[in-house]
Length: 188
Image (tube, rainbow, N blue to C red; front, side, top):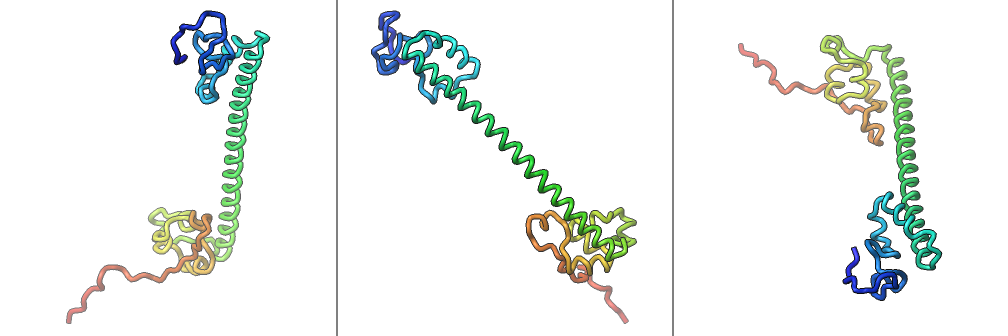
């Protein structure tokens, strides 16, 4: 990784710009490494390099030690911030989930009290539609299989669907829709 020819005498300071006159000509690494190069090095290689440059007692080796130590500290700080962020995201997600469940439970208790527990028509129960699908499911299923009491309740109050928790108004604005089929013609 050294970009000059090795014509320097061994065990003397390198006079090239790569070494800045701080160190001997390197076998593999410069003593004072560019920070961008340090960021690409693995932790094991960084620790090996620290072992090589430490305990030499020269100003160059102390500079290199400080450089490697600061890179190790930077990596530790990045990892600590990453963990803190992941914990914060998980905590926020759990808090939002608990709020959603509490609000859905509150709406469920209110609607069951208002409708006496009958949310699904007999036709819907025969098809396997549950109360949960009426509360949080698709609007088409709601309009087709909800009882009149449930439709009246949700015309005034919002349904606890995903859109409701994103802040949209989910009150059902329905009308008993006319089927798409034409009524049978009356022949005389």
